[in-house]
Length: 118
Image (cartoon, rainbow, N blue to C red):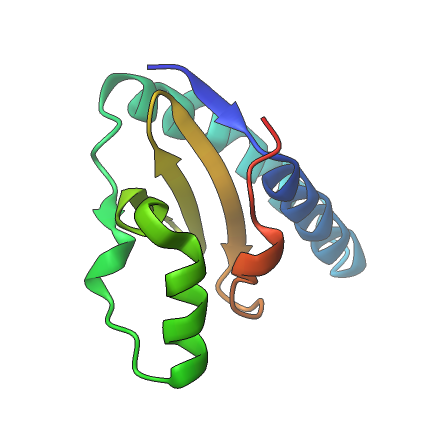
C-alpha cells in the first residue's frame, strides 16, 4: 500500500529536528529519519493495519467529544504506531496517510490542524 506524508507530518518532523538541534544532538533526528525510511514505511506498505486503532480511547471530556465529532467517519480509520520515543498517527483509507509524529515529551495532538493535504 502507498504511504503518503501530510504537510502536518512534515511540519512535525521540522519541530523534532529543531528539538534535537537545540538539545545539541542532531543524530537523534537522523536516527528518526532512518527508522522511518527503513522500518516504518516498509512495515506500513506491507502491513497497513499493524497500528492500533486510535478510536479505542474513549473521549472523556466535552472538548474531546466535540473534536471527535468533527472527524466524523475518519476517526475509526486513524491508527497509532508506537516507535521507541515517538507516537505516529496515520489514516488508513485508499493509502496510508501519515498524519502526525510526536516525541513523548511533546504536547498532545491538535486535530483541528492535522488534516490531509494530499
